[in-house]
Image (tube, rainbow, N blue to C red; front, side, top):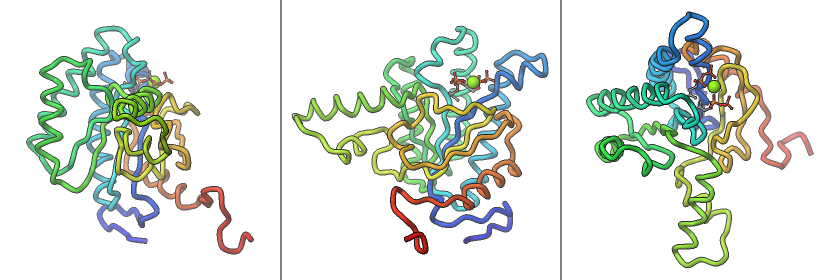
Length: 238
Ligand code: IPE
Ligand code: IPE
Ligand code: MG
């Protein structure tokens, strides 16, 4: 285990990839009699802090679920506020240029200028080694269908698991070891359906804007108490 003095969190290479279902922004705002957009704004603060702590600990891949293919059914003003937050986030990330950004999801339905900003951020940061995946207009089912269509277009008529894995938005990345969901719901909400086959889950009632270093430590401590078997048996279990 590698103990990071600054974060006071120990990790080792069993935890290469952590993913967050950042839920509860709306409830956080409601409790404060604020508009839902304020919840999303504070949610972005949490994201910036938590991603930085994860990378300081030595985690190599962080994935966050920012906007699902189903979130288009929300009121237009809420969607607009989330897209505005994405725009300002991209501007800051571009200035900072310390992380590598990869967007998971279908960009093609977004405003062209926003697509350009997203593509530019991916391009500018492509040589940084800490990877922050932002799942935006992401759906796990759509991702699998998209991979299958790419394979059909390439002329394949028989496909393997590796073919699908290598044509997902997360191609060539390890699957998430740990998926954290805030705000207490025990569901996957169409997130990383293929990649979560052997992920460990951690669910907390804390709302995403309140999720801090202490909460992250609890999630990671819980991860290290799990026995992962991947369908097999560990030493001493035979
Ligand atoms: C998660 O927070 C962010 C998005 C889905 C964009 P919610 O907005 O879902 O917050 P709750 O679940 O309503 O509290
Ligand atoms: C999941 O949260 C999506 C994101 C965090 C972006 P939702 O709030 O959309 O999930 P449900 O509707 O409660 O399943
Ligand atoms: Mg929600």
